[in-house]
Image (cartoon, rainbow, N blue to C red; front, side, top):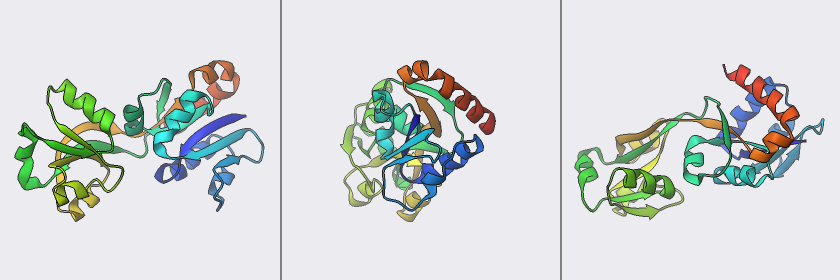
Length: 208
């Protein structure tokens, strides 16, 4: 059996549609259930439904052979695994955002940045030679500039509608081309190559 780690939420539906094109029985993913461990009817595939940030953890550990996760998550987690394919959906950008009238804040020597991508932000600002105060938030990051907790936020932007609704705007695109990726456990790719590689080939053909 090949085990997939998949994030609950926006990527599941598109991931299921792609796998279905490749002959994977994903009907169990469309059932109304609260189960977190699912198996296809033919017993060829298993699915772990986890939080987005946990997908790379399950794959790196070998509990899951394959996973589908956003590039933003992979950058933040920085796990020891193989990134096999850019699946082309879930496209977004990692941006610095804030009030459009305060873009000068980006050059402030005391810049306060709120983000859930702490590790990624640390690397980026270190590479730029900039010292900033990073504030870890787990959700509703847009609230930070509104309340004065931070000057700007570093977050994923898809359409920008949430920013606009809160009077904010993208001040700088830091990382573009963020999308869903197919990832694999390094050991699984060797031990289960006869099962995994043909599936990867089908997925590659389906997205191209």
